[in-house]
Length: 176
Ligand SMILES: [Zn+2]
Ligand SMILES: [Zn+2]
Image 1 (spheres, rainbow, N blue to C red):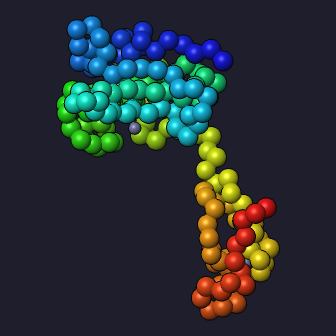
Image 2: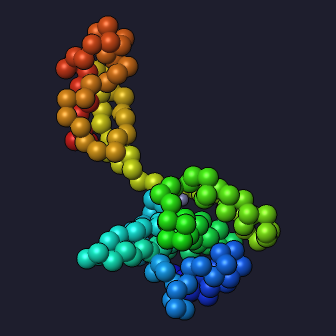
Image 3: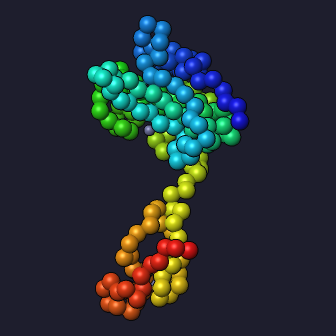
């Protein structure tokens, strides 16, 4: 899978939408990179951390999700994360998708028609969160969970047969 370089798009958007504020001494104030093949839960991330007193931040775009999508989706995701960087590093405001973010998002959306930024990414995100299957010992129904859990009982059976009280007869067993 090949991916397009991010720096040229970043530079272009920085000029067009952010008044060049995301560059200091010709260098982006955030590092940009494509993820490896494991980032499958989100199309893009903005992260900040403090390394021995120095604030650094980075934008990571998901290679497995975005490399199969049209370029405008890459542009929209990169621009979304750039707004996070701008709110955090230029405005120095602590918000996620708050009023500053939304104002900038609307402004950029109204300035061009090539892509649309949204708060929620509108394309399907491959999720593998509910990968554990458990079976109710009473009714046999199979449920999906994010993690294995101990002493979990089937809610349907507890309600139906035990007045809503936990009963070990309808324990969910995970080793399928
Ligand atoms: Zn966001
Ligand atoms: Zn059950």
